[in-house]
Length: 248
Ligand code: B12
Image (cartoon, rainbow, N blue to C red; front, side, top):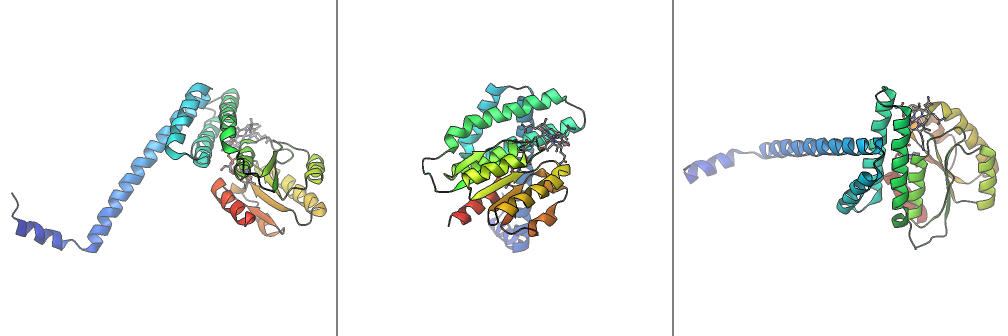
């Protein structure tokens, strides 16, 4: 047994710095543990979609949602992370193009299954047109963006990928949206984005335009200050914050 006088003397010797360092170490151990688990989970989900195992994917989604109850972390921390992992495997020739297509299709099916829970009855008097620009075949990111608008009760028109610019103009004329959201994943489509922005701006002087997508990881940021009423967002949480501000 340690005599209480010795014990209390040694406790007193702990300074607040010691306590801070100990807490910091524990916090980091906890963070690493959580990240390892998340990485492991993402790998499991990645393999599930690579196998096109919709039923297993659905189980994963429902268990994830029972913990978080929110579709945005599901979209970004699970679907987006797993698809980025699929991209790495494809880039390094570890999987085939067919595997990658199946994985994407499985995610799209799982997303569509969430749609009835995302839409709300509280309709607002705002309209958003969301699409991936001409030449751009990636559409999962823009569908996620569309779903965030839907969850806010906006009339949302998701026009998929590779939409010819003249068709986009026609559609905007017909719908007169409050916001046009454009997605670009491939860096070599940046010039096409700029062209799209120019023609849209010529006709719709004040239309609010949102841009986003992985292409901006490689550059293109000079565009952000070039046009008025244009905002870039890299993720759905920032987009959601923007929508809330816009609605005020
Ligand atoms: C699936 C896939 C495809 C599918 C797409 C099918 C579909 N239904 O969408 C197909 C087979 C068509 C395809 C084709 C190609 N692909 Co591909 N593809 C992918 C893959 C594996 C997943 C894409 C995805 O869905 N990601 C998940 C989504 C959710 O992420 P995200 O788009 O970044 O979106 C998030 C944010 O960026 C943001 N966001 C996105 N858009 C917007 C818009 C707004 C307004 C806002 C606010 C936010 C926002 O919100 C989302 C949620 O956080 C990626 C790997 C990767 N790293 O993503 C490669 C990838 C994107 N492809 C790549 C390439 C090179 C190609 C091809 C050129 C291959 C080829 N040689 O043919 C072609 C190009 C075709 C074309 N012209 O577009 C590269 C792109 C490199 C680059 N940035 O330039 C990647 C990164 C793979 C790699 N590691 O090299 N691909």
